[in-house]
Length: 519
Image (cartoon, rainbow, N blue to C red):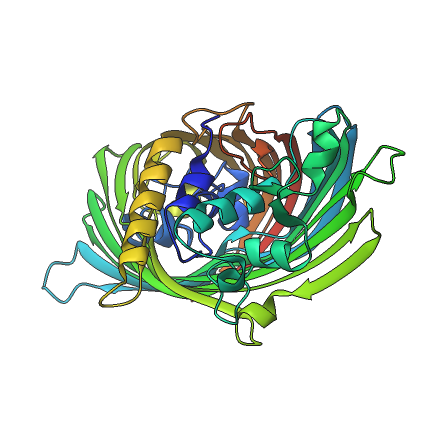
């Protein structure tokens, strides 16, 4: 794992801004959501079409509609996350939540160009692309680093730039969520015991004596990434289909991070006993993107698809509030502080723009008994291959004339993102068999590692299956998708030190149902 990537950003800016490299992956690394029919077939809908999911994958698939359709897709997520940290045991956390997939309306109509074999379709839909509802908890013993050292290193860098303790502790602090609370509670202070001035975190006295710290991390997240979209598609004699979508992504993300450290020794004169750091964070905002695609049928039973998704340009606002409780020894003193005193008695706020990664997709499908009367079709097999440019995420100030500090910060943040992430391939495969009015579907997907240098395995695997019923313009589908995510979590980073991390394994069950009617 690349070292110091977050600290580089902190040490080169005199204005501590909330964005960190991990924010980049949040809005790009997640499985494709869809209707129950789509998900049961592995979400491989790049060339199949005829499903509302197409508006978010390959809008050319909307061109298969020649009549109207209304669809709603409610769902329920079953979360189970296991975390292992420094041989401290495995911790399991469960959190279940309601969700939803593509829901909306499609209108198919004849083209007014005078050609009977040309049709058009208009679709409007909303979906939840990703759910952030989760709990990650782990703890263990650490004898070489402390979370609080990040605050000490930060203040040391600020001090070299001429910032005194009083400068950092004022009502317009440059470090209201980190160094300022640590200095206020004496979790970080200036040590002159050896005649040499050194900025030091209190837990370093424990580590210097060869003792270990008991560390505990808990992160609760909620919210989601949603998208409202409108799509227009054309169909030329069921041979060549094209489509375009304008999407409006909507971000609502909240997190609460709780960090605890305790002295594990029996020594009551080593300055430090414990601290509890509570960080409440929220991101909201919206943006826009464009998706375009084509589907070509070289033969009646073969469909080939290609689609390109532009980056989403989003205007986002972060709001943050931190509480810190520190207990010291020799003498025994307890301190509490809220970050509001460093932000003029209000929750801190930061506005910025984010450009998400672009995507490209190719797809192929084989349709059994491909005929114009879709009721006579007997099924399909479909496969998607998708490339996501995770390293393409970019952050920038929302100000027309950003300050020098903002320019420096975002330039280095974007360089770090480019350095630690890479483009990855996602593959999806699935199919459907139709028995009169009933259908059986199976599928799966693989979402590749987005990190250039990962300390442990990182990927997502889906396996899905479902049933469908269609009769006289009414349809209902039911699907179960099982998602296994392998990832890791780096709770903090320290300059010139080996960074510790937790290995994460999440299993998520997604029960999705779609109800619709054709008109």
